[in-house]
Image 1 (cartoon, rainbow, N blue to C red):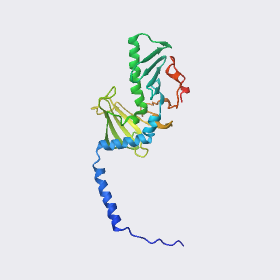
Image 2 (cartoon, one colour):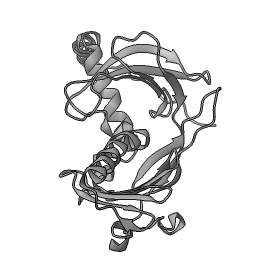
Image 3 (spheres, rainbow, N blue to C red):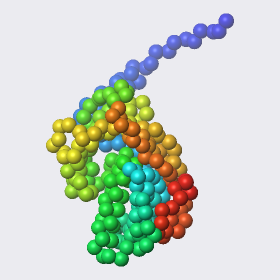
Length: 256
């Protein structure tokens, strides 16, 4: 028979100390602003997706969005954008680059500039559809906590609102983001064309997370009305320089 353990009551000093700590922390939790709570949740999201280190260690990203294939070298600011036989290769800081049509370099300065501007806009937009959670704490991003809600799939989530200062190409946009209570990951988003709109332009899932190198990314953006996925998603450790020089579409299967 197992011997009974004699109960030892907690000393009064220890009880009072624990009570004091609880009372000390309680006002901090109660006074946390919606902005501070949103920031805390955002940091948790990023940590769960690989953290700041994982994001910084990821040099290359590749993906297809709406029949547009792209390869992005984050460290050297190189961006390759393809659509059918149209290829643009540009520097995302200087916005300078080259444009090819059916393998031939486009020489007309005005036409070339139009395509480069289109490719730069594609980089801003298409990358956001892939890596938005990693951008939640960027300068110029304003986050606030709205409250608890459920996603379109019925899962409990924390809902955040994201607006912007004078950053990006469309600072008037607004997003609502649902963060799964259990996973601590973004599982749904809604896009508002203007920050004072009351109804979103769309609401879509943010799901099908997988590991890509040192980070997690999600590829499913479907909703009950339509299926939509990002394809050819990859975060390769290396990409040959010829990828950023080829005047014709490359083999997507080779980037992985």
